[in-house]
Amino acid sequence: MPTDEAATPLPPDDTPTAARSAPREDGRAEAAAVPVIHAVTTDEIAGSSDFLERARGVMRALGARGALHLRAPSLSGRALHALAASLAGDARATRCALVINDRLDVALAADADGVQLTSRSLTAGDARLALRSTRRGTRPLRVGASVHEAGEARAAAAAGADWLVAGHVFATASHLGAPARGLAFLRAVAADVPAC
Image (cartoon, rainbow, N blue to C red; front, side):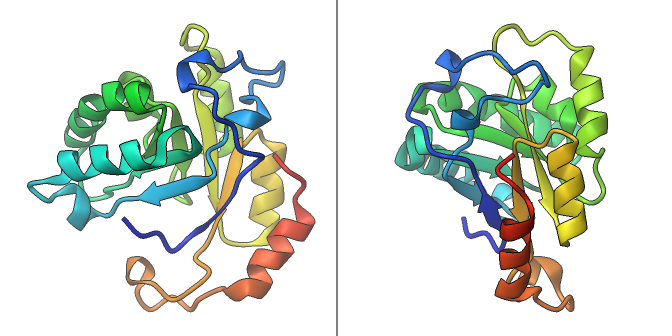
């Protein structure tokens, strides 16, 4: 499940997701809770007949150091939730984080580990505000933000994103016709934004 984005995670951790500490006072997850490797799905992958089997294999391979991003923008919220709910138990068993792309509501309803906010999603600040009014027990929902320029990265980090996905760095089929931002963009984000 290839990705064309570059995640900017905080230091790795092998602590099981269920055993991680409560959120900090600002609502963010602890730094150690951010996975090192993020495997991102596409509509084509998520729609394949063997998707759940393949996704479970990825989760077993990545374990606590990884995240499976369920990204399928053409799926309805109901269909996305069905996939997420089917994978939630596997996320606990493998300790691989289950992250739902774009849909805070689906992430909450499926008891996912995180949500990846995109340019069409709520902002990280609005997501944090919404999360303050929900009850999730001791497991905070982690919030990632996709950023496409250094200013977006600074704003997302300041608003409470637990990690940033900077992209797209290289030409990709998921952003047809859009020019690659290149490594200079990635360097600028990394230099300009402190660890979330």
